[in-house]
Image (cartoon, rainbow, N blue to C red; front, top):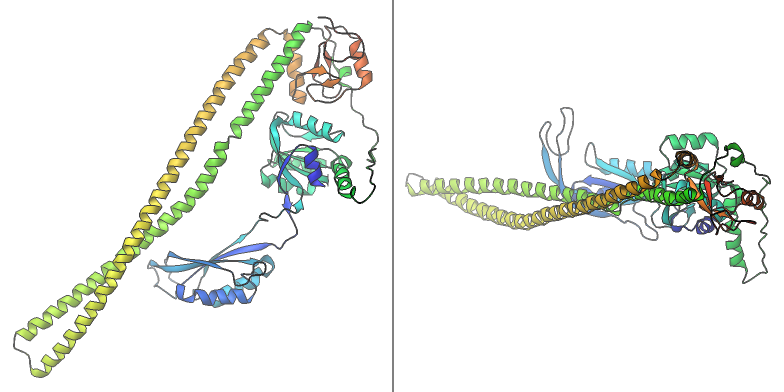
Length: 518
């Protein structure tokens, strides 16, 4: 149903508003000493964690550098109170059904060697599943809320009302046919510009907008569900003789609104001045488009993605740097022990060479020397292994730092592009503002004031009356109303019976009778 509604509004669908139909998953991340990682994983697997489709015992692990400083009352498995402890830890990650969260947590705590295990739990979103409630999509080109509301009314053939800033730019839209105010909180988190649904109530909409939610467009229950009928008919036509009942079945059969013309005092203005309003309306539309473009630059999204990547890269650089420091400390410790062993060996040899030792002591010294030689050999091998590992980790550190710097350069380059784009928009705004000032200067003061009143009220100050449609709201106008307009003098200012904008008449207006004077 919502696919049909989105198609009727000309949206390119990117996904559902709210995912449905699959289990809710948690992602668990646990830090554990490498020797106990298998034990902790097994305990979590036993209560249902690590199951993905037809696979079980699924997990990911990586070794890194951890640190902690126990408090006075702590009883640490590793380390001592008040002293900073650094050590290699394994981070394991796995998913689990959210319904067994308590069991997984208990299994983690029971099997973990630490007094206070370090872990995190992240609730996963729906991912790439296509099924779900509502749809989110993008318009072919941005519109103001006023323009978009008129588009919805024309597409669905029903009265429409909207709440929000009439001049707000609309590019990304969420839709849900029928009664959709239960999804107001969800669409607020999606970052869309507008939400189209039906049966909206006053207080939920008011609270939604006060909380900073997107504009809402209420097209009614029937109108937002009816496009689905044609979609179902198309599926059934190969098998059945199907006909869509086109007549509205909406229980609301009468729609009335105050006639805006009756509330506007008669005004006269030269037809040429009225035609100038079309140029002014186009300039105002361009100003709105520039404002929308300035707040929806592709560089903004690109910088946000790069910043996320940069955070991950900086974390990796810090992790590798800590590992280098740990290796340096271990190497220094070994060097000190090697030097102590060498000095002890030298002292024993000097004592043996002095000739002042008894035969039994000489035998003991020879035995100790052999042990010291073996110990020194082992220590030197361990030191060599650590130094080789340090060289490899140092290369990782250099690569990590280079990656961080490269991403920083990318962010700076995109930021420069963004600044250039904003400068171009500012130039266009200045040029457009100058054009607008020139147009306003040539208009009668009363006519311009009326245009501004109409623009503030409905988002569009004027529109061309062409082929029986108002160019401001794009709606086809009533024949009786057009008959009345056709009888009015060419210099009388008339207003759209639907949106209240000034209707500018030309030879292309398609009036039932007569033509406005030139």
